[in-house]
Length: 345
Image: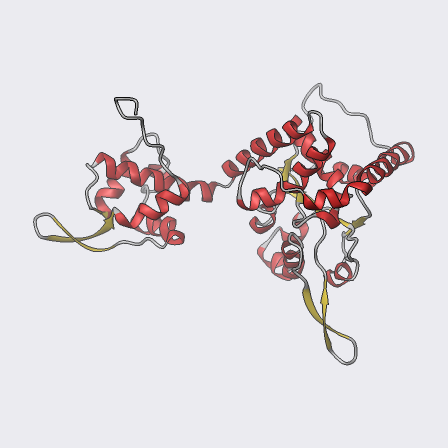
């Protein structure tokens, strides 16, 4: 396993599969690695022996999966997920599978299909926990709903005991049965719990079942679960380069306004000059000529912020931005901690 936090997360995720009817959200487990022979498929072998009612989905059609999910859902295990989502053409062909995996993250998101000779619209449940293994990152919509385990190849001197089904599967099944016995009387309690979470929004939805399992287990598990949650969520935020740049640009624009004396407006040219002049920032290497007006427009598009013709001192008119355009985005995405006053009050 890549870290102690990842090991704790996998253990808690496995236990959570035995309490699926209690959860509002069914977290995905994304087992990814940069290349072959990183242990991804082997981890699925282990999961298959311990999770609740495993359902291997290699080459299974979405229709078959729809019909396999009930009020007591199986645990979906998808190996070689990169062959499903690896290229645009293949991903488009498997869009129905991605829709199933996305909708199944939250309870009460059924899919409707026309079935039978009478072509009767029929709703099928999609809610089920799922583990997916593949080379490279999975689609963003799946990664955003997943506890991400980033596997890696063993280095020199790192050894593991080979997995042998005849020897190891009975031991895994024994552990599975003990987990099922432990979790069965806790179903109602798990459904009622609303734990204090160290993260917010979708990350909290995804990690909540794992934290609840940890709180039910007691001992050191509540702290270990929250430590893993914080560490792994923070790590994944840093992996999303595009999202990171979109947040970074807001903070750097605020610094550019401050550097220029916090004027009511800055021209696009002045703003870009300030951003590209920052030797510590990523903008001078953002393309062959640094950050351009077009690049800035794309980074700010999702915030609803765009340049317009503005009036500047000297009665000149240029394209630019007003400070007020950024106030709401700054507050929401990169709130600034105000320094204490000199008096300490």
